[in-house]
Length: 169
Length: 120
Image (tube, chains in turn green, red):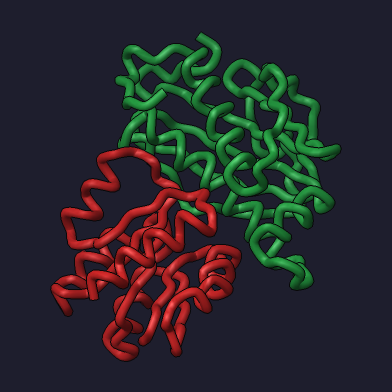
């Protein structure tokens, strides 16, 4: 995958592949250990996020949000690749969560182009998915396993021209 | 030599700071948005700037344009998660000297900075 695609030609399978590639690239570049990204599934409306969450708003050619959700155990291991042996603060762990969500979302622009506009990250350790109002028909969950840790990426995108999901078409 | 790090991520700032010993910088300043980057560029007069793009208050490309207006010879390494070719080309056309895409390795950062420093 190395060239931009036009949205009109982009299938939901393409979008799924782009985000899986983004997840894989992040972990593999930072840790040299590949994550396992399981088959994405439609958000079922009941899952809650893990303790640390980074949210990126999407605008432009697509509209929606990308959220990376991760537990502190995995975050501390990832932080060690940035900070060495320095003790990690809760502020740094939350900052890293936002940086991961920003990196994965930004990297996807390699395929979706510059009109896939991403916001600066918002971070929280208290999201409940249900409060954010994502609907199951337009939201995909990408389960991630790295070492023994679980995390997930939630991607909710619509085509603003006709207000339909880009992932479930 | 002086280095100005511009990134809204504390983690990325820390990573670049920790790598500085590979280079001949003796003073380092860090700011977290584009507006502060312009102010700090005027007062700190860095030899090199590392610049993120997606930041609050003012994005890095806009800040880069202002910095080039202040000093058209400014040496800027753009470090961004935005992976599309258009953004990289735009950054270089505005006046950035190097562009690397997040996530980056130590070797990616060192190579880009070494090449930039060779041009000074």
